[in-house]
Length: 542
Image (cartoon, rainbow, N blue to C red; front, top):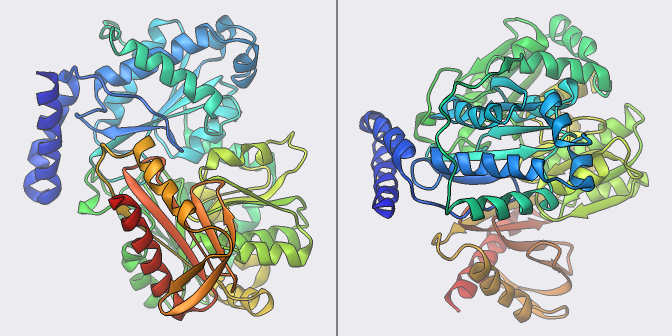
């Protein structure tokens, strides 16, 4: 029975994740289930594509369904959608082609081959990037002039997940005007899925990091030659932890081979050593260790997720999250490189950037969570162009750069920042905090049953805003705070009378409720997080 195979996959992954050493032997069973499981799955593109558990709902058959749905969409596209893929007809899409790549997860190359077979059978030209990071694929779309790309990655999700991102001709994440069509056609196809391709796909192999470097030189926001000179001539150490991901080898390609450029966790490990491969504080230990033993004047550590769209930084003395780093990049690009425009950030992101922008006379644009919401400000033709776009969940891009979250850009701009300021990141951040004020953000979350995700979860969480109108009081660790503003752009954000705030929203990619808080002193963080967690649990019980 199909549903039995889905349960087998879920149970097998539990065994694998419980005991990685023994579990590696069970990956063959997961591949068998991924190939043989005929069970349909609802296709939903969240804030960053469709994701599912490998062998359970993310199977070869369901991958074929989604790819075939994309072909159907392209074949029947109207003028607006054709404009989005940079073509005037399906025949032009066939000539311009589609780029396919994947991160280094289990079955990535096999999934890519399946997608390429569907495209090739429709006489669509196919470019294959192989193992590549998300920003490389975004840049390659621009440099190759293809109509769109398929990127097989679930980003920072654990090893049991696979994912599918679709990007149109501008290289950015597809908007809902595109993904809603893919969802509709894919879910309709589930009843009559496409056959297994009986021909080998035809494709042209490309070098994604070479295309990325060409893109950076063409856009001109960063000075690659100057960055390389700093690494070559200064007393520095650049350490990058790839968590076994697709960014491995990229710093050396961009910066040059040097003993000053050190990489951690570059070996093949499709289970990521048993950890969640995300840029989190608990994953920074390796970088902290190597930097603490270095006597270099300039020290930089960077932690990247498997598809290279998220980054967390440290100078060995201070862990610098995106809440602070994004604001630093805003100040640097505006004050040191004279780049004007607007600050673009998600509603869940620290107000540190707001304080800097306000002081410098830079307009602020806040969006719902999801990097695709930044597109209107990142396009070269945008009337209001972003100096920097970033979100608290470790994603960043800058003026005239890729429309995707770009960890490689984050690494390069951090090095350029050190070269221009003559300071380590922590020193630069301390100066900015002295000038613009200190902010203390934090985030957490609770998992929910997968059956609750979607509309039922949204409905339960909506009760929070009903119970917390403007003017109401909240008890935060014994201190009474008044709600001065309720923002419902994405979830429920409660701004309090001391400038602190909390935001509660359902995740767009996982069965979780996320909550974000910010206080004006570090001692208040714990109480604010506990308050948000209590409010979430009360809402879920109701």
